[in-house]
Image (cartoon, rainbow, N blue to C red; front, side):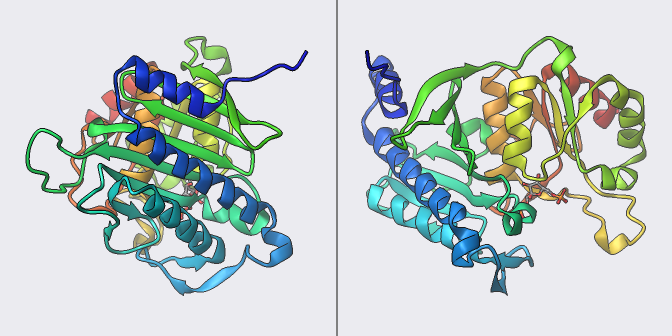
Length: 327
Ligand code: FBP
């Protein structure tokens, strides 16, 4: 007896029909799925094909571009273009907002095609993160940057583990696994566990004495209560938090012995890193705040590559650290 698993596309078709929505979103998601599989192939063969090294140039963030960053960006842009559904895109890899199909497009997409650059040279887990917003269908569209609360969906692929997680506005966060036919299957609803026994803390421990005094104090008072895990790639670390509960944080760096290395505005990017995991976390019953204790999803972006501090995870922990940050 052959056992058939429900595929992602069948799951999404049911979702769209249940909510009397159009096929446009299905076509866009099909493009993102194709992009993720293509990126996974290049990453898995990267070491043998010599694609895990530097590309030789510097990106908008002033960082050395990795060959795989360029490959992942190029692949994603191709599938967004052929979907015909995207007005414009914001990519971590390009300075300017990318006009894709300004007239015929229906969605804005904000993406980081390969997140977790410190893991790339070792072929270790990285992430493909994206947030999607829809054009104004009732009136004129000015193309303004959307806050996370205006996203209709946000998701991440953890590459090369073959897992895909998608948050749908007011419809939960769902995880899918890749099967032997390279299909994403078995939709599993993700809800942050209330039981604290599995909760984990995730942050770059080598930065802890560069955080604000109040954040350092919160860590000292709480770290012994939870396990500590850190992969060094947001998608991988948040993947764990979503399953086990707890909190991932990348606080502002304000007490670095070398003041030039301070990051008072945080390191992670608001639109295609922080807001993406914050959206999935909200749909899974969690929350996320910035260094001021403001909800990440409520922050209106002023610039498309704007940075932010990030605290994301189980509601009781975010409420607790939020009080400290607002204090
Ligand atoms: P990149 O987009 O340059 O990879 O930066 C993002 C990121 O790698 C996140 O995935 C991760 O959470 C964080 O930076 C790791 O930073 P650090 O190496 O300072 O701990």
